[in-house]
Image 1 (cartoon, rainbow, N blue to C red):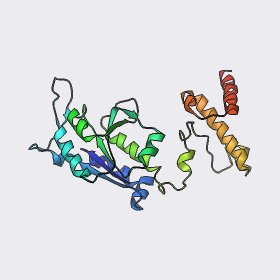
Image 2 (tube, rainbow, N blue to C red; image 1 turned 60 degrees about the horizontal axis):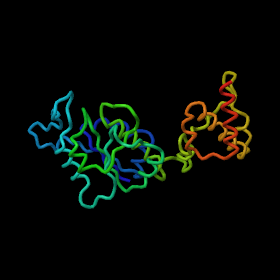
Image 3 (spheres, rainbow, N blue to C red; image 1 turned 180 degrees about the vertical axis):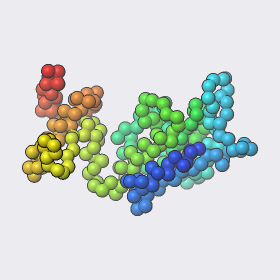
Image 4 (tube, rainbow, N blue to C red; image 1 turned 135 degrees about the vertical axis):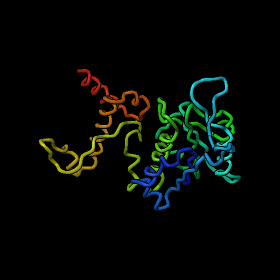
Amino acid sequence: MKIKILTIFPEMFDSVLSSSILGRAREQGLIDVSCVDIRPYSDRKHKNTDDYPFGGGAGMVMLAQPIMDAMADVTGPDFHGRRIYLGPRGKTLTTALARELAREEELVLLCGHYEGVDQRALDTCVDEEISIGDYILTGGELAAMVLVDCVARFIPGVLGSSESPEEESFSDGLLEYPQYTRPRELRGMEVPEVLLSGDHARIRAWRRMESLRATMKHRPDLLSGAALTDKERRMLEDLACSLEN
């Protein structure tokens, strides 16, 4: 997969894209991520990319012209992918959406800044808007980093185990179960016996139960959309009673 990020602060991405899982994935050629500086595309004398908003108001608005020219340059006539603006009005990034985006050949991410982007650029250069949550950031760069990291995990080979992304929080609509590693006993606290039993059926059942318990305690709103058996629903009712008491 190829991902191009249009930004006026490309230096913000250096450490994120060269470290850890993303860094290894790029080195192995599993994902091609590059940043494109919007500033050189500005037709203004000082290469500025913002101006005062028509109608008044605080702050500055990103100019349409540099964005439109940058987008045209990085996509070209043979572009097959999705052009995404990271903004607070967009649909929320979810596991399902990240999995869907991971199947694309190419993504172009537009990072806004200041008070936003001239609507004419969004109308002509963007296929969709995506938000990473109901809060405001100083720019779209951090949101783009989150999206790239989230999507990359669903690209085959990026993670060490092909099952890893399907066993993490939200993959099945529930929060993840507790995890443990060595030593077996630490300062009087022991690893649950079932995880040491070698009985994979029991371990799966325990993990499912703990996922239900964690979700009920921390994010009960997720349960309405989770695929649950009748037995699990009865277990949740019992859990709810125990938590109330």
